[in-house]
Amino acid sequence: MSSTGCRAVEALSIRYVDLNLDVEPAKVLIRGEYTKTRVDRLVFVTAETAKQLKLWLEYEHRTRRVCYKDKETGKTVTEYRTPTQDPNGLIFSIYPKKVRPIPGHMYGEFRAAFAKTLDRIGKGSFEDNNRRRKITLHSFRRFVKSTISDLGYGDYSEFFIGHSGSTYYRKTDKEKAEIFAKIEPYLTFLDSLTLGRKGADTNSRIEELEATNQMLRQRDAINKDAISSLSDQLIEVVNEIENLKRQRHTPTF
Image (cartoon, rainbow, N blue to C red):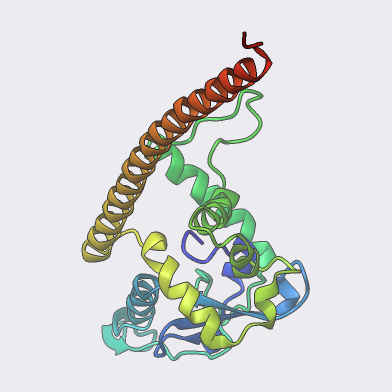
């Protein structure tokens, strides 16, 4: 959610079949039945998020050791089982695979678990009215929107989080991916190399802005000197004209 701007239910609705993590950039399909606009959309996924998803899927389908008591012999039996992957199964479901959960029903448990996490890390404070937490699941979506907008891609941010009306819906996939490559470092959190590059990029931008500011100041100083010089020259010309006028009207004897 913090790298895609998905709504909570949109994220919970993702199935195994919706993932395409082996392309660059990786993509995830959000089904229209769970979007606000009721239209399917593809969401770009950062390399970091794609890596974490792959690790999660490996963990979910790891081989497990299962021990149980045989009813007939009474002996303990140990087996190793590897869960099969249901293409239509929800990747974030915590329910037994035989149960087909509904993303909307999963939301309540997800929100409660998130609230407990906030309390555990000391970030669970409430707004002044004590009815709403300062940090909510929607905070991630606002973060993604503002981050992309602050980089100068306000129209792209509308497209990225699924708002209708953005001109980027009419752009090619290549054009969309090129913009995503520029914003991806700013939606990365655990990759120290990428964060280092982002920091270096930020420093470069600061240095560039400082150099531009210095240049503008120097230009402003030059302009002030030029204006002052022109003003002095203009005063001299005006004085000469006045002198000539006085000489013309002065009678000679």
